[in-house]
Image 1 (cartoon, rainbow, N blue to C red):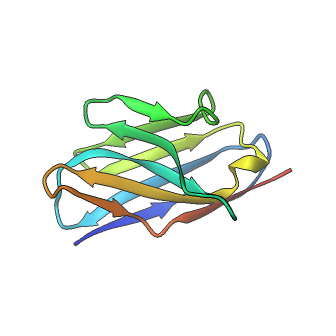
Image 2: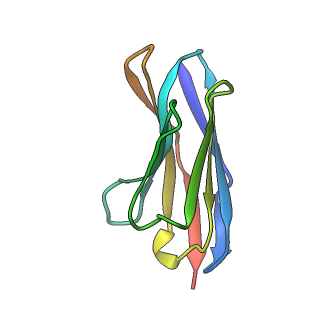
Length: 117
């Protein structure tokens, strides 16, 4: 079994920064892509950013230029540096990965990010 453990969430003022970390533990899997989704109250879960093991990455339009994703595929880790945070970034952030060796998706339990105005 694979477990994803997120850390780094919290409360920050608008304009501030947070860095989220995600560690994949347990069963060893080969990661094809890893990244972050978020879900705000009353809204659907949405993609924030994903990085593929060839180094390519995607970002939601709403976070481009403010968030930066990085990954260490040998250590099964991913990071999301979030700068210039806005109140609308407030959500539960979920780490996600897809393993090409198992063909399965895995999700973390989520970490709360709250941005005050």
